[in-house]
Image (cartoon, rainbow, N blue to C red; front, side):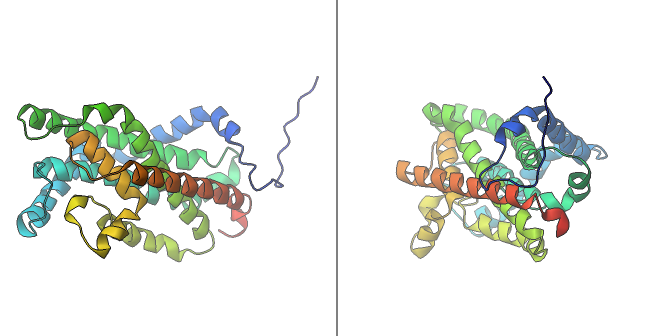
Length: 278
């Protein structure tokens, strides 16, 4: 019996071929590894920058927000508070910005070789997760030190759910990124606005301040931000302080799933014709 593989440009809107993405899982891993190696191949310190960058950023935040602006950290030592917030936000923002240029960055590759295009966004999200894992080595070291000193009391029973919260956060970032990437095939201006938009988004997320310190209309705006719930939940699990409810958390997860689903559908639709417009 002969087997044939038929490749056609005609697909249904929800014909996403996610099973095909699973079959190409080795390629996803190779793309993830390639991105990591290329980023640090010709640097002097290599992956150590993953530890130095959030550490230096956290020290700047300590001076600006802690000592000059006198923002509260909810009783958590400043270095640990800012370091955790910086690491988590870097993970989310990388999922957005790295995927926001997927079509533009890979136009030559997509035009020559066939493989599930979603492999690239997934690999970039996994790369961001690896970066976070390396940065968390330093964070966990400080958590151990301050826990032993009695400065913090992590919520240990929530730790098994941490991977799920990270997955929701990464999925939201990837969903936003692939939507932007799909739109930039026609509107290149969006790629210029991504960096500014992500920076503004950070200040609407409790990264450098705890949610409990925010009141008034601004608090409602932050509560509407789906990243805020995951940020507060992870802070509650890891540091023992966080203002989050089950309903808010469920709403955040639902919004993240919807945005990811929309992003995947739009991305799959655009990939069939983007070579004609890019």
